[in-house]
Length: 166
Image (cartoon, rainbow, N blue to C red; front, side, top):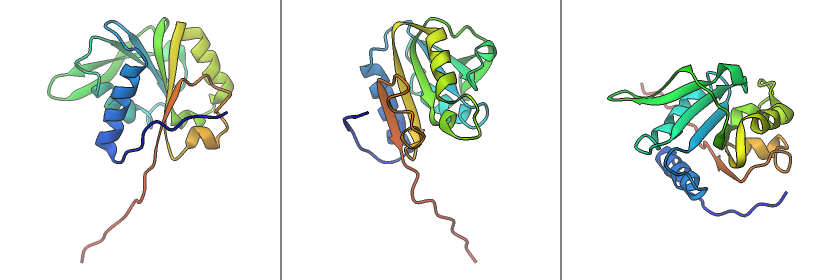
């Protein structure tokens, strides 16, 4: 599947800015329901960071861990702390679905088929699907053309350096 590169940047703060700009460009409006789907544990800190960019926007945000719809949780801002997840939520009627790259890793059993099932079960007609991953995870795992992405944000983490001081 062909895609068009529309922006390149560097750093975590720019990744967060790009997320906000791109999800807004997809048409987020007052009252939009944004559902993040990712691996429990490892994807959640990133989801909370992305959700933080939308903290001042009047949207509803939900997290579906490991694609288990029955385990969906609300995401909200706790003043002075940041974004938190908890409390049962209904992910159905999603205007925007954000899939995290951890879903494409071998340790996650949801895979392409399971992710598409979740999308089909929770989306509103016309819902947009965004992917956010690191190191071309979705592309390397063969998700392009098999998952109905409208947009993918693909970030790189390099170099990683460990510096010991003596």
